[in-house]
Length: 330
Image (cartoon, rainbow, N blue to C red):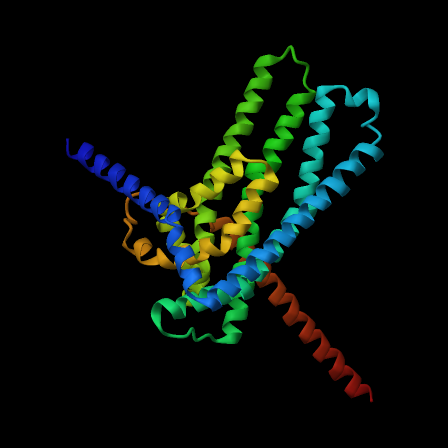
């Protein structure tokens, strides 16, 4: 009986945490009012929206005028007879979209995250000053090292989500399109695996989109990357609710429309995260178990940076040894 009460309390707490995040995300009118009340915030918001829309238009031009026509016109397997087959149509579309994500979307997202260190962070610092009346004091050297670490952790987390939501499902669906239609059970099993990967990826995607709204403001408050990751992993249900509306928009519209709306709303998402930060801290964080979302990205990043540091030290040692030998010879 006691265990049932405890479980029901945990379920209630989890529901409250998720609904609080969803409610804060949908209260976007608060951020719009703040933007309209301050000319500096308005200018920075307009600057970010203009840049994001320019990137979107470039993405559309790249996909519609570059990758897809190239595959259709130059790919040997895509001649007229083969294009009549629905299976080859699936292969064309999936291959084009996969190449597009690999060669264009990932670099663009990397560029956007790089901009978050400057323009997005600038907007967050201005909002922080507006809400708290104090300017953000930063150690430049420390900020650069933390930004490098955080950027790579984000990149590997982003790749992890892309693998789950796009690459792995695309490979499975493409493979199922090549199977003889008579093997309906096998095709159904493969497609169910693909959809399962998409669901897991979409859940993580919602958490990340919720995180994007808060991350810049947490940097303004002086939290280190690992402190921010801990906050995400301990209160991921709130962030899932906060990011869910954006993921629903992206998943229920065409690719470019969904991402276009999100990019246009993103500065408001940052401001909304700043306005909701107190609610995040008050949210119930002990209802769900911690989600070790950043374990693998942090592990890869730390080992990569450690290897880079060792190689740099070895190069410096070799340089000093060569210099010492040359001095001895001379």
